[in-house]
Image (cartoon, rainbow, N blue to C red; front, top):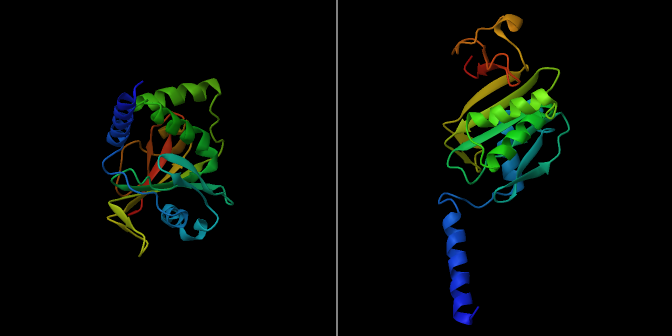
Length: 197
């Protein structure tokens, strides 16, 4: 390759790399800020010992702090427009981590669960034998200076794999005033709560 061609190739490569980045991508916040925001989803008494996975480099989720109480939190992804953090019992991680891998591989929508459910059935993914909780917060943004989530709303879930309306006595119809069962009879069956209850 001649020198001019090499230069043009390098310029094209840089252009493609920059164009491939999301327009809303932001710098990765310091680990301490990610940890502080991630654990907000948990009750205060559980925050100090919860593990946190976040970002040391953009797009790569990795451990920022190990778990000491069985709860692990996922920091907000700075590449996303909206704020979202979640914390769940580590017994759910094989199922959750597999979902993250599938989405990175380009698997979309309900197909993610189709794959995971088949892998649970085959024994590739182990599900918890006891109930496992998940807390999350969705919001517009996070203010690191005040530790506040703008327009944040939280949800709380208790996973009971394969639970049904009959086995729990819970309705599968959503409610703003009472818990209900989502995805009954599946590996990700869970009791759903809203924080306004």
